Length: 180
Image 1: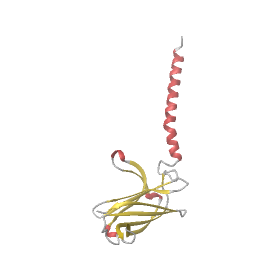
Image 2: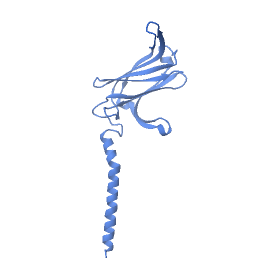
Image 3: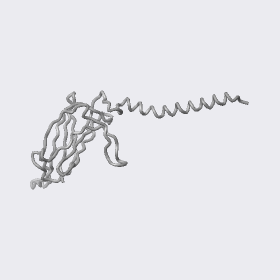
Image 4: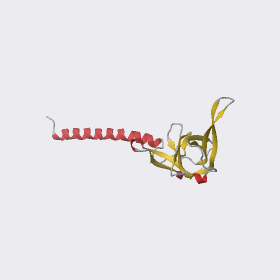
């Protein structure tokens, strides 16, 4: 017959083992993410490899709100200082009788530059409902049609950005926009 103290030692040892395994299951993914810089907006030492996302949407009756996301070669969102060139273009279509093709013609409505600092990036929840997620974004902000060279006369266009990193690497991204 086992003593009460042996039974309690066994139960306590079993519970401690379960707790240690549970903590390991929870902490290992967190530690891996910390190593990748996924918490607290940490940057990676490898620098950005591409523009993961450019988001532009109509905000108000005559304005566009724009932000972008940088990522390293593994797809992890990161922050990086650099210079940004922004182009907002409208797209019209021209039929070429010689080639019998419908060609896109882009007219530049706005062009600007912006210095991007590390504090330009912030973690933000984007999206709606079950499609929402937390992203590390750099907000360009709202640009009104009054700031354009000319107001859009077409319904569709695109927003293009070129981000030059602190090491001189040029990253490009674009997205479509509906003006009306």
